Image (cartoon, rainbow, N blue to C red; front, top):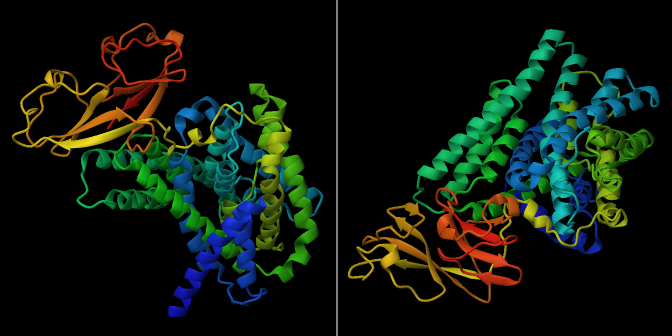
Length: 531
C-alpha cells in the first residue's frame, strides 16, 4: 500500500515538473503526461504491468465528469453569448459530420468493417476542452471575432454528442437496438441530460444563496458533490450524464455566489489533476510495441481528420454565418483530440461488441498526433492567420476573470458604543473618496442605500482607491453605450438592478469613485458590486 501511495505522489510531482518543462519548450503539457505513462508502462522503462481496461474506464469516466463540469463552470457566458449558436452547432452537427466523414474514410479507403469505421469516427469526433483551455490560457491567445469563446463552448459541450454516437454505434454492433429504441435513446440522452443538469444547477444555486456553511470550504465540497449528482442522476434516468454535468457547470459558473473565486481555483486544480490522471493512464495502458501494427492506418485517419474531416465540418456549419476565412481555418486547426476520445476508446474496448480493429491504439496514435502537431502549432497558426487581437484579453472569456482595479475593501464591525448605530447611511460623514458598499447583518449581505439604517452588530464594508490592486469581491463590468439610456444621467437617477451598486467608473485613463451625483458618459466602464 505504501508503495502505491509513494508511486502516485512521485507521478504527480513528475507531472508538475514536466508541466514547467513543456511550457518552456512550447509543447502541450498533456503530451508530456502521455509520454510519462508510456515510460512507466509495460513496454516502458519501469515496466509496470497494467492492462485492466474496466478499472481504467471507471477511473477515467469519473475524471471526465469534472473535466466536463469545469468546461461549463469556467466559461464566461456573457463573452460566449454572441457565438453560442455557432458553437452549439459545431458541438452537435459539426461532431456528427466529423464522425460521418471519418467513418466513411475508414470504410472506403482503409476497408474497415462499416460499423467499426463509424465507431472510430464517433470516438474521435469531439475536440478536447482540457487541451483547448490549457493552450488558450498558457499561450494567452487573444483571438479576434470571439473565436476563443467559440472554441471554449464548442470543446466544452461537444463530448456528450460524441459519447452518444459512441454508445449508439456500440449498441447497434451488439445487436441490442431497434429503430424505435435508438430514437428513444437519442431523445432521452438529450432531454433527461439537459433537464437534470438544469435542476441540479438550480438546487445548488439555491443552497449556495440561502445556506451558510459552518466551515470554510464546505461550500466547495457541496458543489463537488453536486457535480457528481448531475452526472449520476442523469445516467439513472437514461440521460447523458456528461451533458448534464456541462449544463450544471455553465449555469452555476455564471451566477454570483460567495467564495466563487476560491471555488474556481479549486476546480481548476482538480481538473488539472484529472487531466494528469487520464493522460497518464492512457500512456500506462498503451503498448508501444503494438503501435507499428496500427501506425499506417492511424496516421491516415489522423491526416484525414485534421486536414479534411474537421475543416469540412467547420466550413459547412459556419457557412451560413459568413465568418471570415481565417477564423474558419483557425477553428478547423484547433480541433484537438484528447481526454474524451481516450475515455470513449476505453468504453469501446470493454464493450462486448466484437471488433477486429485495435480501436484503443488507433485512438492513442490519433491523440498523440493531434496534441503533438496541432497543439504545438496552434499559437503559430493563430499568428500566421492574423487572428490575434492585441486589444482583447483571453482571460475575460473565463468565468474566474476579475479585472485588476485600483480599489481595496475595508471591513469594520459596528459595536456599541459606535456612533454609526441607529443612523442612516446618508447621515454618516465619511472621509472623501470613501464609499460604504456592503452591510453584513446576521449572515445576510445587504447592498446599502442612503436610507439603510445601521444596527449594532453590523459588519460594514468600505471601499477606497489605492495605487495597487489587491481586491477580492464580486465585481462586474458594464460599458455605457449610447443606446443604453444611461448617458447624461446621474447615478441617483438610474436603477442598476436589485443588489447592485456602482463602486467605480473608468473614463478613459481616469478612475472615478462615484456618488449619486456622478453623471455617466458614453464609453464609461461602470464597475458594479453585488453580493
